[in-house]
Image (cartoon, rainbow, N blue to C red):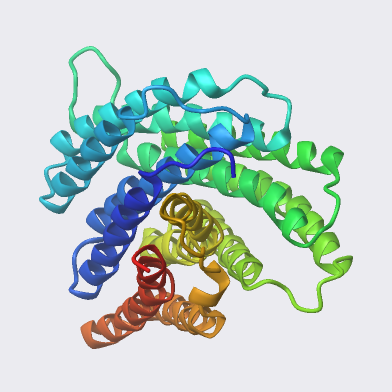
Amino acid sequence: MFYISKMTPFFFLLAFTDLFIAVFSQALGFDYVFVGILGVFGFILHTIIGAAYQIIPNSQQTQLKNEKLQIFVFITSTLGSFFIFMQNYPIAALFTLTAVVIFTVHVLPALKNLQPVTIKFLVASLVYMNVGAFLFAMAYIPVQGLPFVPFQLAVHTITAGVMLNAIIGVEIAWIPMLLMHTLNVKLARGVFYILQLGIAVLLIGFGMLNYKVVAAGSVVILAGLLLFLWIVFNAVRNTTHKEIPYVIKFFIAGQVFLIAGLLSGAHLAGSENFDMVPLHMNLMVFGFGGLTIAGAMFHLLPRIVWNMVHVKKAQEGKQIPNVFNILKKNEAMLSFYILIIGVILMAGATFIDLNTTRYLANLVFVVGLLFFFRALFYRLYLLYTL
């Protein structure tokens, strides 16, 4: 790994905190607007910023200049989360917009080769990140003379524009690589263009509050995802691995929830049955986002920490520990299964109007998060302090 972002682990910890509080708040009966905003502008956004600080420089084989800017981006991101906790959305939106703009200015000079399809996805994600942060501010800080911005548009600009582009873009590179399978670049580009069309139609629908158009955009996105799943299927089918790496199992489980979330969203939009919003949110944010991002953290964070330890131990003339002797596959898979059960129970609880059912379902997911914390963050802390 050529470039190591020392701030990426802190962004991941911030994102984990956002996710934990969002799920626990839902268990306590907080409204879905608060849970959704914290999940989207906290958990999802901060994960992607943290991951991009590591992935973008390495994809371009370059170093980031003015590295201390990462600290300022992290501080403003943390303040954004804090004011979301306080439900002071106007101030939260200002800090979020500030963090996103500075982050963009920081990483843009590193983007020189835009030809790889993964970079196209990441650039699209970066564009939507700025648009989404700006719309978040406009939704909660009305300015005379500017059009009304529904918060649904801001939220889906991040979930569809940012999260979908970033996750699919990274997975389209990582999954074939981890399975030692050659990527079909032509199909990958097809996925990119179909998804961009679907995302554009979806967001236009939310901008007009025309849910029939939203449903149409969801169908186009689904078509792009089916093509992406064909790429994944070929990679799994042709792999020489005796067993699928557990990171990819997280990715595949996330895709299952993504398809379910898209179908629920298309039905919700087509029927305008807004009682299904919590179900859609659970499937997309906690199912797709939660499982996929957990897998991405399991893949990326150990490599970052190991490289940090490598430098420290080499300077001290000590033996460098093997990261795979620190991480425990059984612990990772235990968190995997509990998180899946948690999402299924959370989705099911949306059909039962009982506080106890909702509380217990979210509590299962919280337990899964605690096992995930032990399997990843705690184990890497032990590695770092050896």
